[in-house]
Length: 545
Image (cartoon, rainbow, N blue to C red):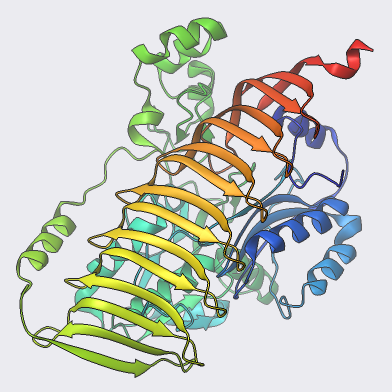
């Protein structure tokens, strides 16, 4: 058998190993929007090469590009650059080196394929992510934001900006990037003539956000190149003022890196100045929140007395009582107790009611920058798309076919490979993913099938090998792997089976309960008992010899 292309060592062992290690490591991030025709093959190749040189971290690969946060052994950094160059798509790629780094940022290598490297919720095929805002280095950023007429927007989530942000920035109360895009566009509707400057952690979200604002008609859109990380490096190197106050939140074991000495946030339990994020020690809650040292001692790392009392119960008693409690993590998510959306929802409702639903239609044909022809029907009165939509490759072969109703996708949207075979089929209801989703290999064999319910993945997700055999199946609940999973070898025999619970920004999903692993002949080789991804072997076949 070849090398496994995923980690099979339990979370606790990996974490303890990296904590004990004296190896010097470099934490960095990078991203690139570039077309990757076969994300799964790309992912597997990258996993093999990175695993060989000891890279750890979390990487997402999609057809639109790659998004990576990783840790590289210092002595292997030259080898890492050689590996990156071997892909042939990373020329002149900026690597965002961490501001603070103890070498303990990641303890496993996780590379996953995704539909998008940043979940943006954008479904309109006319959106062009390449039409981005103008990049600003640290000097230009400082000069432009000194202008009182410039509008500065933080494109991160609320829990990130709570512990640190640029002075004078708008801090949207959003929990996800998908939620933030339309929120920001709505907030700035009357400011389209102003200079809009956007920033995020490393730049990847602003690439999409600046393109989205330009798509919505904003002209003077700018973005901080390399985000907060690169800005801090440049400010220190050039000896210029750093206008960021507090901590820069990061999605690894560190959770933040300090940029300035100011503490601008407060403990969510007592209100004292504090800016240390932790996850509630009660793993059935796992709420991300800010806690001071005194409250950490008082509540034993938990977010409430309820969680504190529950956390000390034996595992079997926790399991028996879990349904009797509603923890903060299930009610609020990432330290977000109030989100005021009323004004935005009212605006959207009034806009919807004011639309004209019926008018004569016309057929429109044009070409985009790539020479791809598109043909669609729209109403003459308000130019709302309604009816059939088609897009073609430059050679005339069909690329996309879909149906619109009142300017929203409705029914199936199909994508085709250049050879004419179907690439994927999406199902919409009034502009929202709702129904089956299927993706195919270029040969026409089914590769992935899932089901969306009102924009959220639910039910069994199945992946297939090129020979048609099921590769794995897992239960999804609200976009998260949550329930029974089974993995298979290409010969059809079972490889592993167990139970997942959702992960968080630090990793996951987590194995829970009994995990069984088999060899290719179908023989049971190992049984383990798992809790939150920490799996202890309880039986192993080779121990019977």
